Amino acid sequence: MRHSLAALLCLLLAGCGSGAAGGGQGSASLWITRDAGTTVLYEGEVAPGQTVLQALRSRADVETAYGGRFVEEIDGLRGSLASGRDWFYFVNGVAPDRGAAEVRLRDGDIAWWDYRRWSGEGEVQIVVGAFPEPLVNGYGERRDTVVRYRGPAQREGAEAIGRLVEARSVEPQDTPVPPGANVFVVAEGPDRFVAEAGSPAGPYRLTFSGDAEALARDPARYRFRVRVP
Image 1: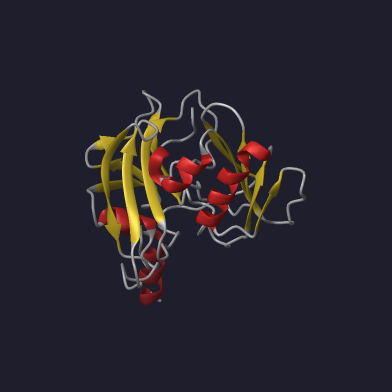
Image 2: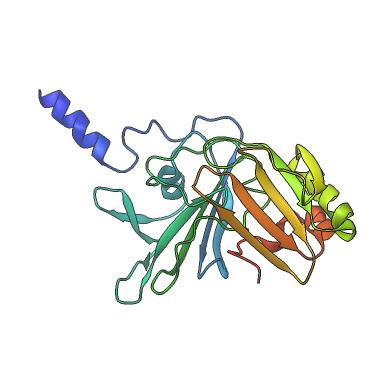
């Protein structure tokens, strides 16, 4: 009985019961930013196979609340009810539906922590700052991606994006999208890049206007951005 109670208490603590840190093959990325990615505090690699919280603890001083399930402070930067700021995290640009002690990183994943205002802002489910994620690894289930373009002038840019994300097809906008597939839309107009998702698991819809060929050549050009503009 005493052993059972000890095991139960262990499961309630951050990272405990989630397996040993590391142990995966390859590498994952850890980003720590503030103010919707305006300031980068840390960018580096971590071992896959560990939870997002374990990865964070391996690179920063962390304080948690609610039995380790809520990150309250990272490297002295603390959430505040008075200022309406807290730490939020994304995996491959997607806000997960579980705590960071429950989400395990895979090879190629990006764990991104951002300290920002929540007061007066809508919920952010998906961002563009990790592109070409979430179209490559996604969150949970990997889905096919298709690319659609608004007009002939966007075709070459759409084809370049299609090669980057290994799209299942690149077709005009009125071509039906297969059920459950992610879609990247190349539109016309000035720079604008937004992402939408019905749920963390997808499918995801990214709409980009601007120079899509330049984006394909440099996928990190909008790194750490929530949306553009």
